[in-house]
Image (cartoon, rainbow, N blue to C red; front, top):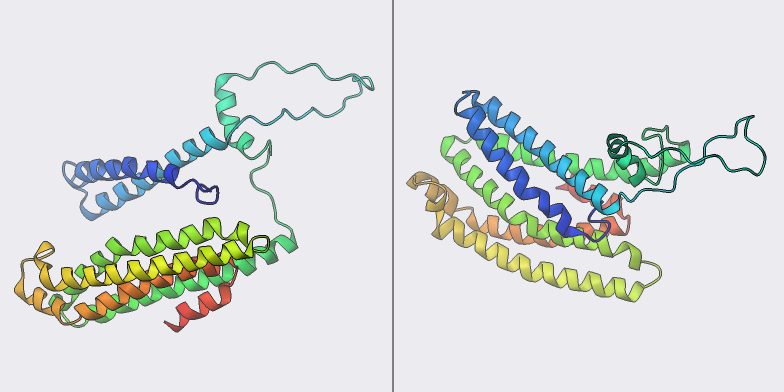
Length: 277
């Protein structure tokens, strides 16, 4: 919602609070309460709930202006042409509980059954994206399972590479989100500006991809001690470091292109590319 409204700052405000909540809960649940991995998992879930609550609060504060009061239904005692008496002011607690409804423009029912045309339109959008995300998850799981069969050293090197992936992949995702936020409103009416935006995002992704790829290669070969002190893991990381750099560069570029495809609703090629990978 925030990204669609060109508001990237508000969505970032919940990140530090969720991170602090995660750290505090991990220290409490894993340490004094001795819950181990289960405690860490519960801490992560709770921090995500904190993030969701903060985002909802920010959304209501920015977009939850009170909607015009809906007129009550006509009753036999009401004379024609005479407006009903205004209702008494709602208590503070009731107004707070109704705030999410006001944010939806006064809609009283949050859950409604979609129509057949709406289901078809939603399925056309959701099905390719679900297929693409499922293919990406399956690819990640298959790589981890394959590396686990090669031994502890290979698995440790793979975990370091995965840490580098999660460290650098947000750069490509940010460019993709930029395209998704700004490109749709330019399509059709301002096609020239849309092409300019796409070309600039592509140029930025190519430049950033080269830099991220080179940095990934350097960290893997020149600074593996940042992650582990074992020489065997260092050696295992050195050989495929060039492939890691190339894959990170390709991911940054593909992340920006994915945003453009989603903005243009070209979802089938996107799903086919993930399934092919």
